[in-house]
Image 1: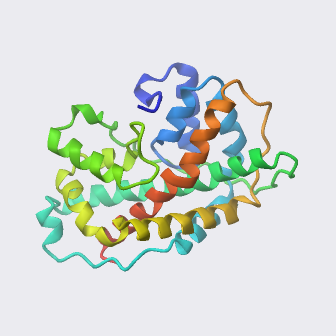
Image 2 (image 1 turned 90 degrees about the vertical axis):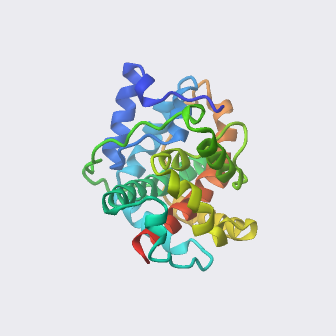
Image 3 (image 1 turned 135 degrees about the vertical axis):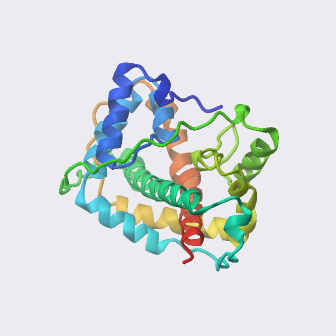
Length: 267
């Protein structure tokens, strides 16, 4: 499993950084990439200090919207009226799920742009740092329920989540995208997801969607390069994960998030 420090297990110094990530990003969760950075010596503080001005900027708000517009999705059929009920979603459950999906869309887009900018900065250390326009911290909303450990889930639900994770080229080595674990309270949705988004889960469509996400994020990040401090001890260990998450894991999940949000809203 990818090493991580979950919020519930975070010592005070890491918990304080997690709290600042929530406050500046307006996202009431800590994504796997940040939880992994926390497990590497000196990485979390270094990486967050670098990208914090990007995350809390007016430019980031516009960048997220442009990336969404640039993602290339296949045609995804509207859900039949009975599909939500068949997945066990009543009105309250649908509202809660839509609220969670809005959090995941915002969080993944923010991380994609900010961490791509960090990757590009490491590849071009002599380029000037961007001058960005800060905005006030955004309310992060109530915290999401803690992510379950996959080993604690019912066997059939865990198997379906692992099968969904395996459709992504960035999966492996125990990486389960947080979205699928967050969907565990709605097992009917997890079971239906492969059918609802079947055209996107086709390998060529997923590769096309991912490539368009990476391309759009790199276009935005290229003019948002952060200033970075002296390299921490864990930087060499972090680079492969940074590449993997910004080239494979996050850009695979952004199209899924956008598509699922769309079918839930009927758009």
